[in-house]
Length: 193
Image (tube, rainbow, N blue to C red):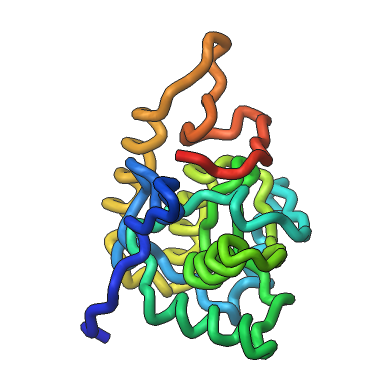
């Protein structure tokens, strides 16, 4: 509901920011929320449209958020599950080919915290073969098509396009590290803003 929780998006550990990077795409309240019951249908639609989806496990520090707020309460609940052994490691977080978390920010946040605490967790991912801007736009379209668009989708898409346009490119016109597109490049080095 409308309950307020501490936001981990601005968290820094030893001077390294582990929450949302400057210019991240949107607030959670402005994002389409695809429920877990529709994940299979969403993946089928992506693949039917020629967008591959692969499964894997990665270091959570190699991922970057697209959400501005990360609730300490929700993340803490997952961290408690990691500590007591009840965490469902097989529940996958949706990510883009350019290593942005699309869905599953609280689960990701807990695994980042565990990694920074000296544990060696990986995070199970479902990787969409598209840069995060295109993937988020596709997710928004899927939400509209399936009647779950309780968010202002046009504004959300506008935010995505504005963010992508503002991101730096290298000399060859490819998105540089931290940029909004993939250009076929996948940066798997740990995120250091």
